Amino acid sequence: MPSNPSNSVAPVNGTTAGTTAGTTANNTNSPSIPFPTSDNPPTLVEQVQEKTTEAVKPVVEKLAVIKEQAASKLSSGASQAVTKLGEHSERLYISQAKLLDTCRIQVRRQPMTMLGLAVATVVALGVLFGRQTR
Image (spheres, rainbow, N blue to C red):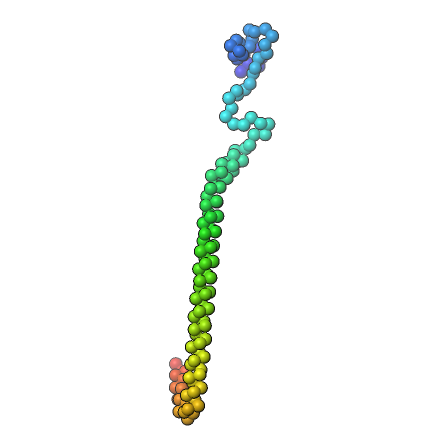
């Protein structure tokens, strides 16, 4: 490129810069730059980060919605499980109380039979767990 701007041919208002008197040459290196022309243009890394952020933003929003839906489903499922567990626990407690009452009644009616049954149970368990495998 020539170092003297008056010798270069650059159109200014339909004429050349060197031939028109009183007109200064408009010597811009790149008149139609597709990128921003600020003093500190963004680096390629910053541009990639911006594009990536723009591309990922809808995905992040969608994941946030899915996360909230999953959390609400999990919460409702957990509350249903707690309710069911409470119901079954109450039923089990009532059954246990009824069985204990039945046992008390049987022991009061037939104390010797219940004592014999208890001794037989202890002996049977002693034989089963007392075996040593060699």
